[in-house]
Amino acid sequence: MFAKLCRPVPSINFRTVTCFRKPRQLNKYYNIIARANCSASSSFLCDKNVIFVAGLGDIGLDTSRELLKRDLKNLVILDRVDKPELVCELKELNPKVKVTFMPYDVTVPLAESKKLLKKIFDKLKCVDILINGAGILDDHKIEATIAVNYTGLVNTTTAIMDFWDIRKGGPGGIICNIGSVTGFNAITQVPVYSGSKAAVVNFTRSLAKLAHITGVTAYTVNPGITRTSLVAKFNSWLDVEPDVAELLLEHPTQSTKECAASFVKAIEKNKNGGLWFLDQGTLENITWKKYWDPCI
Image 1 (tube, rainbow, N blue to C red):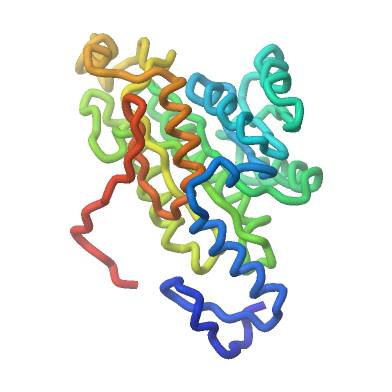
Image 2 (cartoon, rainbow, N blue to C red):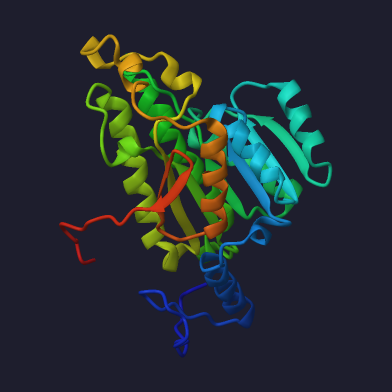
């Protein structure tokens, strides 16, 4: 599709200007820019198709509830464990929104993720936003922590690129990855978990900088200490601090509802490359200090 170059379009603001031969493709490109710079308003999510990985978890469930207040068109929840009573509750919250549950384990091979997403795209025809929210906190489970928190997120993101990448004729899309404050300031007693979240932050920042090539924008939401089942009891690496959960909860925390409200506000702001800090009911975009740039 990009074998031949044409006259560049000066109004496109991305770092690298890409030119298209067909007006239809150029329209797609302008639509991607419009999505990335959409002003913060509740109408942004109206009539959108959203895939939410782990949308029935602690933060995930309250965020799903908050999303349904925005009159989405479709909310597709992918989760490892089926919880029919919660899915029914979500359906009743806003009957105008089609809520669908599909079982999904993020640790499956990439090919399986692609098969599942193909089913979703075949049914919905288009998807606007992917939220990657699966996560575990247990530094005894090293392989599982990396598989769920990082590899699974990367695979799900990679899989959806088959349908979104503008180089393949796709329309582009928006990726919201759930990181953590530990992604930029580690809890030293859980270095495996903290390292996995740092990987999510850097992966997502790279995606954001590749938006001019792929048409896919991305940002992270990074909750502070939130009162969930994850932090109620968890293991430190090599048991360096057996009481790590209790010590952590001595600090100021936020409820899942407070976190969810800030979460959806970040989605509505739709800032490509955003590094959102969600803590105690507040929302702040963190400025990342650059110490080195590969300049490529």
